[in-house]
Image 1 (spheres, helix red, strand yellow):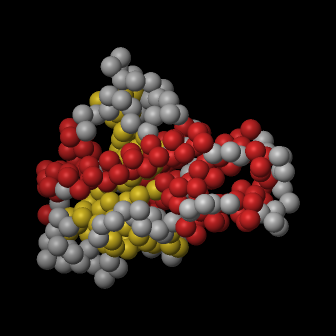
Image 2 (tube, rainbow, N blue to C red):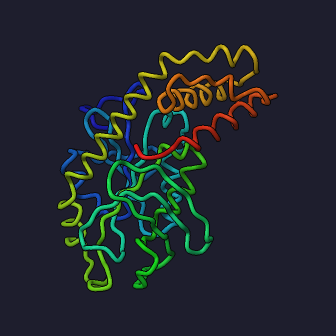
Length: 278
């Protein structure tokens, strides 16, 4: 790691950005002043000076996207207060250059859907395919989102995962027009929107850190036994719920809980039910 970069701390607000292509990443690396950093296990990421933003290029396709996401999130505790943002291009029956948050992701092969949260911007549904498509009847289409969200949900909660897509091709201008400089230009044209989303997620990460310090878990840990790792999970869930629900009283939800696992399952379900527009 560069000597000018601060070491990572669990008290540091954090956002991880995933792009499939180097040409998608290039304008972000320049605008956010990210520096290339080699990973101990091989490969590299791009990190800013205060270590609040880290970018990884996944490669194209849902399998590569899933593998890269899992690799990034392998240390669950490191990700406790962080957010994940996938930025990239997508096809669709929309104007070229239009930028959308994604509120629904469907895997074309599995016919399974996920519902990530979204910021207060225009939203669209998106379908992920294994190969490039020119059939634009499915709304927005890409080749990575379902791989990212499937892998991410093995490590983190749905409220931590966001998607921002820029239309690169449509029925009037299909995929044959796409090249690296064209993609970088699309990202550049939407930099203000992307940076605004990054700033919003950094603020959310900061809020999580601040709330987690004040959360009292003892009314629950006194009643059920939690392992060390489960205590981290409990604090994280209570923090996220306290941010989203005014005067949140967790014990009111836990009358039927018999074990710590029941507690965590109940609180996770409640969090999932509260995720909406941010």
